[in-house]
Image (cartoon, rainbow, N blue to C red):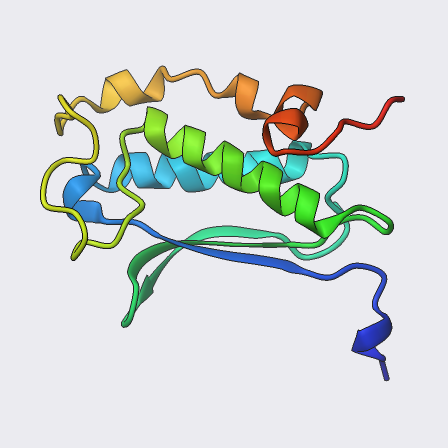
Length: 147
């Protein structure tokens, strides 16, 4: 038996709707999901022993979504890690020229000049600066811890 109100860390669950019609196909969306998984594994404040998920999901209400679940390590601030993840995923999605807004809101391409079919261009995108770092923590609105 477990008392979930006294768990050492709260899970973080994020569901991000993606508009495939305005995002250039499945390859870039899959690359985003794969990078999010690598980011989870690279972050020192995420419990590597607990459940982690970064996968694409089809929902009857939201359509295509990136579903992400993970647990922070004991004592880590959930809000800070969630903020870092959101900043990172928005930057990565912009580099891949993915549209994260609902289709009803958008009427044109997500960014001017976005073209479909140039997947080699997106495979070469450098995302290393979006991996966990003091700069990302600062961009997420938190003061990095000194070590």
